[in-house]
Image (cartoon, rainbow, N blue to C red; front, side, top):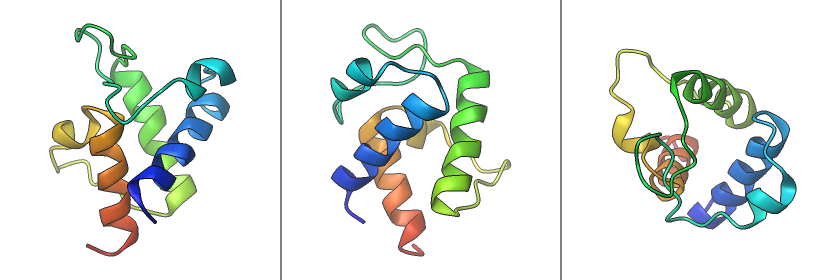
Length: 91
């Protein structure tokens, strides 16, 4: 899987699991940031990140370890797409 493919899957997850509107998800790019407190970001809070993590585990069959600091991976759709690609390629 390539990062662009992961981005498209993330958009689907945002619509189905986090109740984004399809039109809103379609406008998202790799540069879109996630955490609240960043201007122009999606404004995710801790509950959004938990739901997203569960959705990633379900969709991609990856394990997201709680002790691991995932903050860098959940900064933007780009970093999250690359994280997914690394996890689904076993690396």
